[in-house]
Image 1 (cartoon, helix red, strand yellow):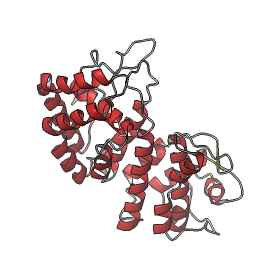
Image 2 (cartoon, helix red, strand yellow; image 1 turned 180 degrees about the horizontal axis):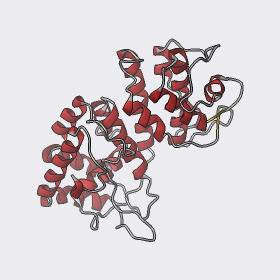
Image 3 (tube, one colour; image 1 turned 30 degrees about the vertical axis):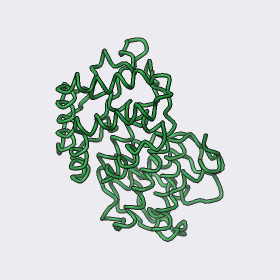
Length: 309
């Protein structure tokens, strides 16, 4: 279990703050609001009271559509990322933030108006992506189970975040090299969870019970990106995933997972999944190609199943 002090540290985008020279709150707010109602930027810039998370909703609408006050952006974006990380890692800080917001608007804004190179230089953008990857991996390191039923299965959260990040930022190699190192059993668990969607059909996945009208559930959708697939994924991500999402590489990874998870209560099933990859290799290879094809698309309608690709 990660201690509270370390968990708090994980939530601070210190690399980005350093790359931005530890920005201070601007003394003057001149940015025009998207909806003509002022106040949210001023409240975000306050440092002596908790920030209402809903103010970030309006802030990212301003960012997406209006002329941006860059000193305000330098102060507010790291603050928003901290709030997001605290929500992802369930590490509240009542003295810093209050209320609720689900941050889809942040991803929407960053997808529609990339932060680099319009506002951040390469070093600053890299520091931001390092933080995003760190939070994702910390979230993945909370995964221990390999059996789920119903709509509240914990893997849905990290798998959705993984898809969002690889569609928006050139981070796939950073994520996968750390993830597939299996430095912790939890990372091996995540590999099995994610790969199961490529190997099994929706009604025979041994880790995720089939969807039911009453409870929901079913296997994860590995290409769910908060419905923001308006652009192709970064080419570097597509090239890297294309090189690693092969039967040979996945077979080797699953074999390592069987060893790392040899004491897991579902160890026998993990071994069976390693065998199933060969038995279902045709289906796996078709889905791997579909995943890459989806990453390469400039724009597409809603995709909710493999059959839609």
